[in-house]
Image (cartoon, rainbow, N blue to C red; front, side):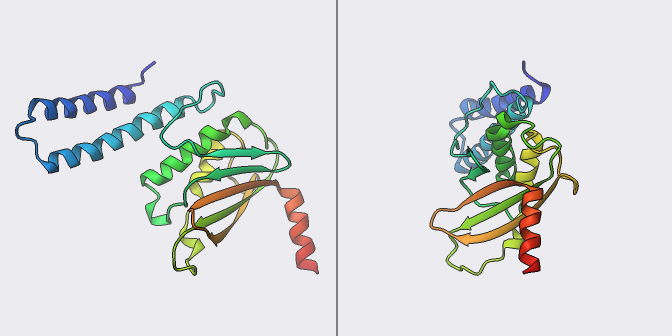
Length: 196
């Protein structure tokens, strides 16, 4: 079933395609550049709409261009994100929404895994910047946390249900690894370290 937003995106995209086809003799590079930017925006908005509608349905897997997101769940729960987290100032950009939706999509089959539990989320950000002394506190973890809340892997991101820590590393291939621990075990370990 098409939602209103989905239909609006398709209609707007069709108008732009019709303009290019009907005016091919006068279309210039700027028109094409604007169209390509708009096409990507519409593609993302449509994918966003479909994913949100199906966020609770484990039988629907929405495949997009980037299918490298992975979950490894044995003794610990790990998520592989094939990109670096965006900066705080870029919280409204496509990278933020892309990470949020992909995390929600790849983890939705683990719904309620940490229900009624407090968790610690350990995030390792690997960047390939030549300057190895970059600031980890400029990265935002919000798309990861929000994606886990949407898929209901964690109940919510309140202080009663979640805390996190972030570490930066260097790697030739930029990526992020997220590990979720039972908070009680993690808190006991931290307490032992502090009391040494």
